[in-house]
Length: 314
Image (tube, rainbow, N blue to C red; front, side, top):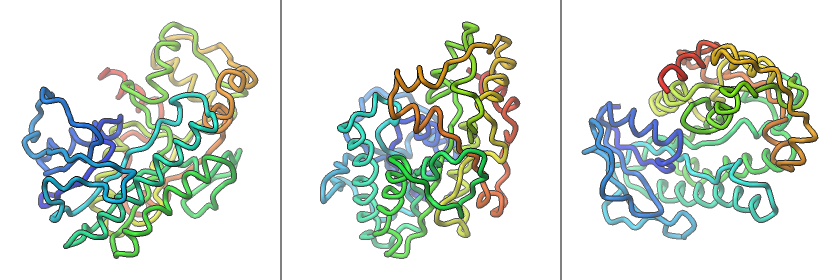
């Protein structure tokens, strides 16, 4: 990717921050689209001289301020969107979840389609939530979408890239599973509870959890940028999904803490409403068929080894 110039959104999130650091180490030029000016005093890393920021309004018909030309962009990675676990899912917040994914995606795809020359690829975040809760069913990219709010959001999110696809840009929809990192996301919220010896299964513990550790997620994004044969939906999960019970036991072993407690499903529904049913209690047993067919190898395909690797660095 030495000749690449990457356009990036969502650079301040868990995945985006790690991706920026990885690309900076490779000294790949980047333009980060941001909604607010970045502070002047920022940490410096090797390659940070190749990173610039550009203000944009992702809800505007003309979303990029264009203080510097975006022509010459060879690839784009779009990661922005409201946090699913940010708050209880009121009707208003559900509208925000949908709008924060669909409108900016369509706006960015339109901008990319208008560049000359056009970038080769748009790698856009999506989620395995598109499949819905499917119990024991083994799911791949060829599986049909499920029903409910999250599948509808993910489907609209992916369809919003249509302007880029119609312009001949290769579009990859990275359907992320649970991204494991001690610095954010679900695992970071669990760690204080488990380290206190108060962890345990959620609901009946039989729901399937499809996951990947953050370093493998970053490698998968970079692989998607480089691999011309990849397009359309791509599941970013290891080939070894686990049940919630298996996950809690593994985390307890890694932390050398008991994981014997149990949070019943009704308590989760009472505390979190619809969000609990659609995220915490849903069962999605997903395989990375497209990544595997393209030759991608996970560095941490097994849960316990992956947890040990990321937690020993935290």
